[in-house]
Amino acid sequence: MSTSEGYKGYGAEQGNEALRKAIAGTMYPNAGIKYNEVFVSDGAQCDISRIQMLLGSDVRIAVQDPSFPAYIDSSVIMGQAGEFHEESRKYRNIEYMKCGPERNFFPELSATPRTDVIFFCSPNNPTGYAATRDQLEKLVLFAKENGSIIIYDAAYAAYISDDSPRSIYEIPGAREVAIEISSFSKFAGFTGVRLGWTVVPEGLVFSNGFPVIKDFNRIVCTCFNGASRISQAGGLACLSSDGYMAIQDVVGFYKENAKILVHTFDSLGFKTYGGENAPYVWVHFPGASSWDVFSKILEKTHIITVPGTGFGPGGEEYIRVSAFGRRESILEASRRLINFLK
Image 1: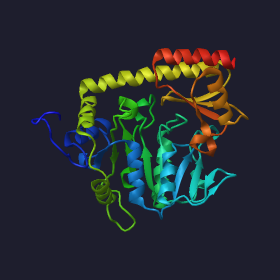
Image 2: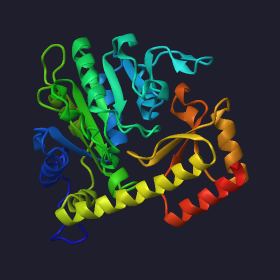
Image 3: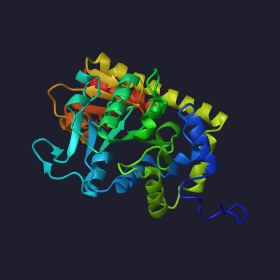
Image 4: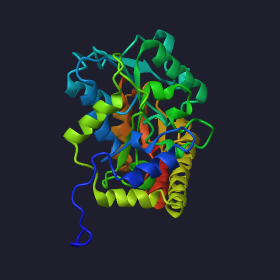
C-alpha cells in the first residue's frame, strides 16, 4: 500500500472476496454459509451498532443478564431502551433474561416475553459459559415461534473445548432466524487492528418477506467504507493453514492462563465459572458489592478486574477476571491474590 504498484485505494465495502471465502470455508465448514453472506468489518462491536441501525428504534430487544454492555448501550443510543429505573438498574423497554448458575447460565424461555430481537453471546462475556446444543436448539425454536431475530455473538467461539456449538448455524433452522457476529480480536490478537465479520443468511427475512441481507448491505455501503486492506491481509494470513495452526497455539496459551486463575480462586475457596470455554473467569463473592470487591483488589494488589454490575444487574456479587496477558503477569497476579485473599 506504500508503493504506486501496491496501492489499491478503496476496497469493496463487504470485504475482500478471498477473505470472505476463507471465513466461510474455515469458520463454517459444515453450515452451508456462502461467502456472499459474509460481511467483513472493522470489528464485532462496530457491527453491533450497524445492526441496531438496521433494526431501527421501534423494535424491542432481549439480552442475557449479565452480558456484553454494547447490546444495551447501542439500544439506548437508538432510542429503543426507554426510561432507566435506578432501583432495578434496568431500562423499561429491554427484556433482561436472567442467566445465572442456578439455571446453567441459560434463560427461562417459557417465562420470557416476546421481543423482536434477542442478543445472545456464546461463549458468554462475562460468564465464560458456552451454550449447549440442546440450549441453542431451544433458543432457535423460541425465536421461530415468536418471529424474533437472534443476534448471535460468537467472538469467543475459538475457545470452546467441549462439544458445544461454535456457531448458531450448527443448529437446524438457525439460518432462518439468526445473524452471527464474530471477530479476529479474541482469537487472533487483532485488538486495536480492527477486523471482524457478520453473517447474514439469504434465508433470513423480515415479516413482510423482504431479505434482511439486502438492507444490511445498504447499511454497510452507506455507513462503512470497508475494513483496512492491511487488516484484511492479516486476517487472510491467519486463516491460511499455517496461520490457523499458530492461532490454535495462542488460544491454548490463554486457556492455560485461565486454568491458573481458576485454580487460584478455587484454592482460596471462591466459586468460579468459565475459564474452560472462554478466556474469562467469573468469580462469585457472595453478599458483596462487585464494585467494593473491585476496589479492594485494586487497592490491595494493584490488579484490575471488572465489576460484574458493568454487565448488568445480574452481575452483582461477581467480578470478571481476564486471562489475556503474559504468563509472568498471570503468575504474579495469582501470587498477589493469594497473599491478599487468603
